[in-house]
Image 1 (cartoon, rainbow, N blue to C red):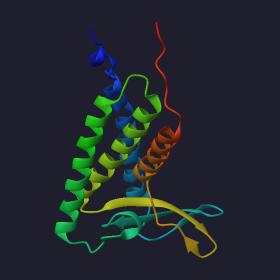
Image 2 (tube, rainbow, N blue to C red; image 1 turned 90 degrees about the vertical axis):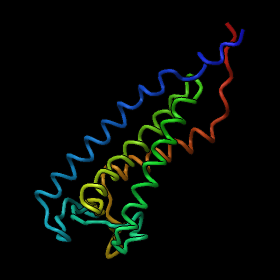
Image 3 (cartoon, rainbow, N blue to C red; image 1 turned 135 degrees about the vertical axis):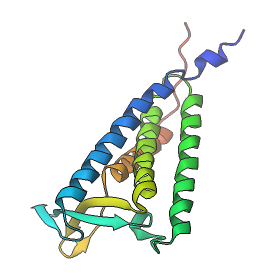
Length: 168
């Protein structure tokens, strides 16, 4: 008899704790940024690094940032659908896929943090401003960092040679 159902990562959903940590850290830092920073007024932290409060109605690099209501709800719907797909993906990962599980949990937590902003405010709160000279990277937040880090981990996991099951 095949043990296929138990070979699935039954503990994959336990990685949702990492998603919850990302959501909480993201929302706390956005609250602090919104409370203590003034919109578009940079606060120098160090060379190449400011805290600057920005309200982003679009996605990465302010793409789709026209601020229209349809864009807001389209992005919310898209992120919720991606979140559901990630949860399903997590439940279907084979046992021992730690890197992929962590990557997906980070992406899920980041997406949820930004969706919360879109639903609550109609925009995403960004505040991390990295720059070199006069060139500024688009402002971002903890959720964006988690999504990026999760995506990098997922790429690394994909490029690694496949694991072989050990015989018992």
